[in-house]
Length: 259
Ligand SMILES: [Zn+2]
Image (tube, rainbow, N blue to C red):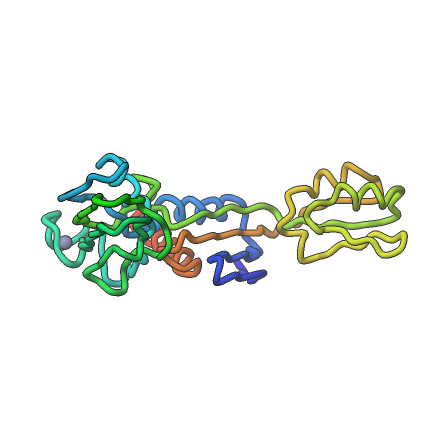
């Protein structure tokens, strides 16, 4: 049986770290790929530039707008190819947004207006373009649900994993050297003794290096998998994981029918 154990959740930074027990890398990698490639989000796909005499070419402005994360309500939107309107475009598969600005200075993401108050650009202070006097932009945008496998702009975030590391400290010959080389807070020195700061171990990328430094330091890995999720803001980490689970289930059911 698979067990999940939450290690750390940073809601402000949209980061989640948990342990998977009783599953192998194949399972972890499946979830990772589903998150990056299949969990859908909203992103600007079509736009009409009515006016743009800013320093950015129309194409560059369009590219920037496409890459800005939009808060996504998965309950209200469906993928266009699965929508009842059969690709014609309706309120279930399209979100309309506008951006109109003519004030000197930076134009920020918060200035864009969305027809759905639940779904607008996530980062309010993300700069889109800088205007000087007499410059303006006037853009009408259509955002649709899409998947990271089509274009990375629809990817909801990052996911990666590794086996759970266990760092042990015995009698260390040269603790001063280890502390000097330790840049991520994994070790603390108390007198002549070296102490492992456990909460820093999971985040460290230097554990192999520390183990190679001194025979008194050993690094082992358990069968459990440490899974990291970071959201770009469209969905919460939990939504990313639960949607990945739903997609996996759909895929398994589809395969069952074929067999
Ligand atoms: Zn539709």
